[in-house]
Amino acid sequence: MTARQRRRLNGSALAGYFSHVIISEEVAYRKPDPAIFQTATQRVGVRPTDGLMIGDDPITDVVGAQAAGMRTAWINRHLAP
Image (cartoon, rainbow, N blue to C red; front, side, top):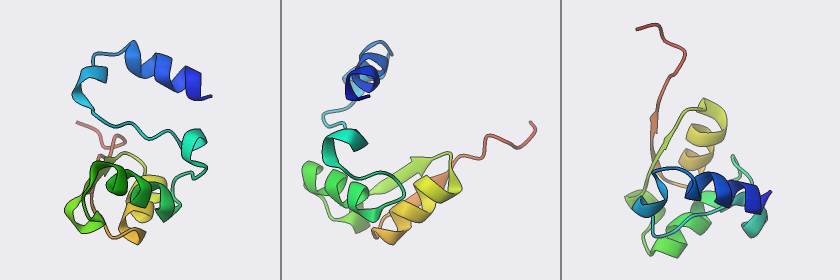
């Protein structure tokens, strides 16, 4: 799974924009476990309260990040234009 996620990222135009990438299989935590968000903020050297999680799943992205103490922004892909 980790190799597949890395291939996806490296094959996209996004890879160069990130200095750190957290893949759940590498850290043994999955969203919405607050530990994955805490791991991410620790790796980049910021407090969770200084982080912003932008995600499209209100449970795994928003609830998990809020439980870790992060601010959140939900992208609702289900709203009609």
